[in-house]
Structure formats: C-alpha cells, structure tokens
Image 1 (cartoon, chains in turn red, yellow):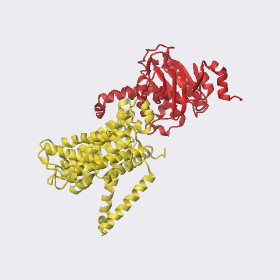
Image 2 (cartoon, helix red, strand yellow; image 1 turned 120 degrees about the vertical axis):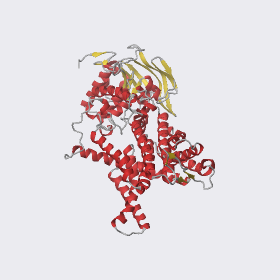
Image 3 (cartoon, chains in turn cyan, green; image 1 turned 30 degrees about the vertical axis):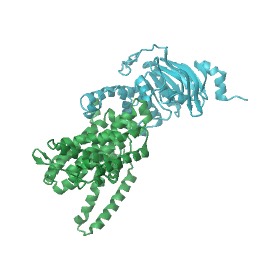
Image 4 (cartoon, one colour; image 1 turned 90 degrees about the horizontal axis):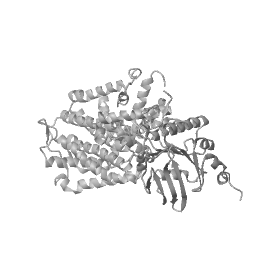
Length: 281
Length: 358
C-alpha cells in the first residue's frame, strides 16, 4: 500500500475503475431531473420535481417517510416511468427506459431492504455485478476452459480488489444469507461497485446499523466517492450522516421539492424544519 | 480423516475457481467415473444395467434439466414430460426420415426441437411467476401430450399409435431393438449423461449460472445489474428443455424400446419434479441423488424381501414399498428441507472439521 490515491486510476492503481468515462467534466451536471411527476392511479408520488446531480459530488435526498425519495431513485434507474418530465443522464435525455439499460449506461444502486442474491456466496454476488462487463457468449460458456475461464479470472481479480477494499475477505465464500446485516449491506455496496458505475444510488445505506457500522459505511462511501470518483446520490434518515457526507441536499415532502442546497442552507430552511417538526395550525 | 482440505493452498484464481477445488473430491469423482464406465459394464449384469442403471441415468438427466430451470432459475415447471416427449418424437421422426445418420446425432439433435418448444412455452415467464407459471407450463404438458395422441404424422401413422425404436447400430453393433446388449446401451446413455452433466456444470459455474441464480433470488436486483430477465429466463427454458428432450429420446430409444403417449403424462412430470425437490433444488448432484432415491429405492425395497428369505406376496411388497418410500421422503424433507444435496454438504462439512464439532 503506497497510500497514494490517483484520480482516474483508482486507489493504488487498481484495475477497478481504470477505464472511466470522462465525457462529463467534474462539477458539471451528470444527471438532470426536470419537472418529473409520477402517479400511481390517483396517488401523486412525485409532483413536478427538478434537480440535478453534478459529477463527483455526494448528493443527498432526504425527507420524511413517504416523501417520494425511493420513488425518485426508482425513476432515475428506470424502474418507474414518470408520467411527466424528463431525465437526462450524461446529456442524453430519455423518457422511458428499462432498468437494464440504465445499468448499461452506468447507473447502479443498493436497496433499502437488502436485495442480495441470498443463495449465492459473497464472491458470486459481486461477480454477478460484473455481468455487464463480461462478453463471452453462450457457446464459450458451455466449454468453461479457455476464453470463458480467462475472462472469469480477469473479473475475479477486479472482484478481489472490491473485496479487499470493503474488508470482507473473510466471508468471501460464505452464502450471503448467513451473513450479519451490516456485512450484507457492505456486500451489496460491493456488488453495486462491481458494475463500475458513474452514478451510484444508495437507498438508506445506514438503516438499522449501529454507530460503528455507520462509521465504517460512511468511510466506504467517502472512499468510493474520492478514490474511484463515483458520483453518489444517497437517501438517508440519519441527519448527522447526511450533513457530514453530502455536498448538496435536496429535500422532498409529499412528493414536492421543498429545499435544495448545501447542507447548512437546508438545515436553516424554515420549510424543512416545518416538514420535519410539524407546524402549529 | 481422509476428507480434509487443510494444506491445499490455492495460488491462482484458476485453481480456486475450479469446480472441484478439493483434491479428495476430484479423486472421488475419478473413482465414481471409473466404476461407472468400467466396473459397471464388466460386472453389472443385464438386469442391473437395463432395469436399474439406464432408467436411473435417464431420470437423472431429466431431473438435471428441470433443476436448471426450477432449481437454478426459480421457474417452476410442470411440463417436463411434455418436453421429454418432444425429444422422443423428434428423434423418432428424424431417425425414420434419415435412417443412415447415426442415432446418437439424432438423440442430441432432438434436444434442439424440445428447446425450441420450451422457449415458446417459457414466454409467459416474463409476466407470470411461481405457482401461476407452473399452471402455464401445465398447458404445455397437456397440449404436447394431445399432439402426441392426435397428430398421426408424429408416430408415422402407426396403427398402434405408439412409437417403436427401429434397429440402429453404432460401430456395427445394434444399440436399439431386441438385439442390443445392455452393456452397450448403458455405455451410450452414460456417455451422453456424463457429457451433458459436465456442460451443465460449466454453465452454472460461469456467468450464465450466476445470471440464472440472480434471477431466482432477486429478479429486481438482477435487472438493475443489467441482467435482462426475459432472455435469461428463456435461455434457462431452452437449456432445460434441451436436457429433458435428450432424456426423453434416451428413454424411448435406449430404455423402453417403444413408447405410447401415456409415458409422457403429467404424472411423469410430477415424478421428476419430486426428484428435483428431494434431491435438492439448485444442485447438480442433487438431481442424481433425487433420481436414485425415487427410482432406486423401490427397486431395493422390492428385492429386500426375497433377500431376507421372506416370502411375501407381490402385492404386499408393492404396498410396503409405497409406504416406506413415502415415509422416507417425508423423513428426509423434515431432516433437511433443502434436499439430499444439502445432507451431502453437511456430511462433507462435518468430515472437514472432524473430530471437532466446528
């Protein structure tokens, strides 16, 4: 370990994130959400929300329960299709998109309730995250020796870097269903990282963790952001974490945006205080 | 103990990613293959080969095919016997159209026909999940069986309505028909099953197997990883049906010799599904263990009474067999709901750390 971080080449010159897409300069909007509205029948989950996520930043989305935060993430990675509004990622605008296309464009995410592949080992889970980068087709896979195996080994090396980075070497071959919750969250982060995303969406990465686990997770998130240059959008209820980690915060309430700005501005906003503490009518 | 991996260090990812990373497993597999390929044909005898081993291998292959679909990809199917039938009838048509081509080529080729049919009946799997998908595949089962009865072209307009394996030779020796030796038939079946098992093992240990399991365990997350659901599921249906089709062709040509459409009925589908569940969902070895338990156990029990010198009526033996097998299945499922493969894994784990408890 030389302790040096080289931007664009990943930590300690790792192969992971060695080929980065730099079509969007740091600080420019990577993802823009414009006037997005999402309805489920008569229920308006999101109404007319606009914000952007700039390349290289940690963007927090907060709000009380039911504010539409997770729906927003689902819209961003193509799981829900908004009735109105536009989303541009890396300058490309889209209205409808399948989740697998969003993944191919470089958006990956973790889930509020751990959504790991329970029957598979830690290693296989993270290897599954490499699927998009694996090219050998069906007929090579029938014959697992030669090119298909070479490819597996190449990706195994990258996966091992993630395992080292997240310090989960000891549970490499354990089925993830048997891991404690904190470790499962970490494996899920690893699986999302394995896609080498440009934009990483984290849905409550610290939910249900104790202080120590939260601190570990914060460190990993900051490292992912700094060392790998991954842009992060995160939903979190722990305000201490949000204020410390994020560069900018957007606040939703009942599907509307009520504040947007630096953590300190948002903290001082009367609308946000009212949303969280309630107002006397 | 003999089974211990201590000291077997892996210095390359290749060694670590091998299907059998532990040396004792590799030795064990070599011994099993040696027994199956050499000792069994030499010392097995006609009855053991043609009435036990060949059916067992055929069922194991069908169970393996279903396991790829249900155990690995999580798509419940009740159309197994229908797909086996497609393989059998395709092979029959092919070999009667082109008698000069080697039968083994047609047995393998018939798998493609059943794969194509499997893909068609797999299409609803994008929208339908779980038990409802099982009902959709039930349609395949009934429709295909209807075809086998109602379309005379499929059985070459035979009066009997059955298909009969014509005599075909391999290296000048008959492998089908009344003069085929059990040894040769057994070796052909064993070779095909071994080859297809090896291919299945390659598939499930690589990218495709991981995609299948990802779809099984959490399809939403799989989609967000960039795994496209429909192609992945359809591939599973295709590969699974291929295996079932080959198993069906082997069943008619190298085991039964002739078959009526009733052979490919729903009860056969259930039988194979039970083999998969009892053997272990998502386990290749489980398919073999399940087939051995469900097909092999009654045979063992039936021969037990004469061996013990008891004279019991044939009907009584039949009833006792049913009761014992039923009780054992319930027993196994209580002890280990994840099937025989899981028991096998537990045994291996215990052996590894013996004499310590963990």
